[in-house]
Image (cartoon, rainbow, N blue to C red; front, side, top):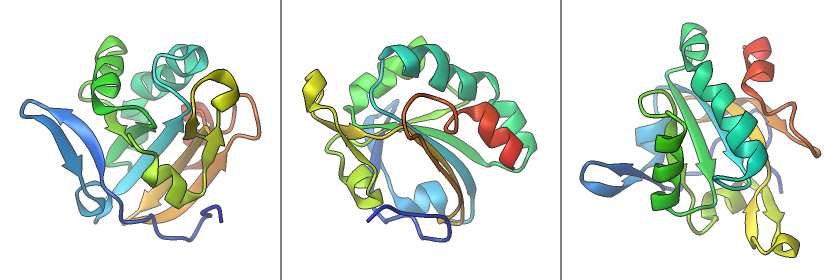
Amino acid sequence: MTISAGDRIPEISLTTMTNEGPTPVSFTDLFAGKRVALFAVPGAFTPTCSQEHLPGFVNQAEQLTDKGIDTVACISVNDVFVMDAWGKSQGADGKVLMLADGNGEFTAALGLELDASGFGMGSRSQRFSLVANDGVIEILNVEAGGFEVSSCEYMLEQI
C-alpha cells in the first residue's frame, strides 16, 4: 500500500556520511519536531536525477527554508558512499542532506518501489517528493512518469 498525505512516515533508519564515516539517521533525528522536504530519485548519477532533480533542490534550498522547511533531504536506493560522492559532485553539502536507503527498506515501507530490473538496476525508488511535519506527510507528489511534480519548483508552489 502506498503512503499518502496524512500518514506518518515509517520509523526506519537511513544512512548518511559524516566525518566519522557512515552514520545511521533515525526517524527521530530526521523528522521529530521538524518540517522536512524529502525527495527521492531512482538512482544517483543518473541523467535526469543529476541534471535536473538534485540541482533544483540544491539551487533552491534557501527558498525552501524561507518557506519554513527545516531540512531538505534526498534519498535513493544506493549505498552511502555513492550518495556521498554524488552529493559532493553536485555541491549539496550544507544544502541537501544526502540519505542512502541501501537495501530499499524505507522505500518499500512507503510503498514507492520501482522495478528497474529491466535496466539492470534492480529495485529502486519511484521519483517523488514530500513535505512532512513532525513525521506526518503534508504533501506527497509521485511521478506517473517523467519529471514534473517531484521537482523543487513544483514543491515551492505548494508550500
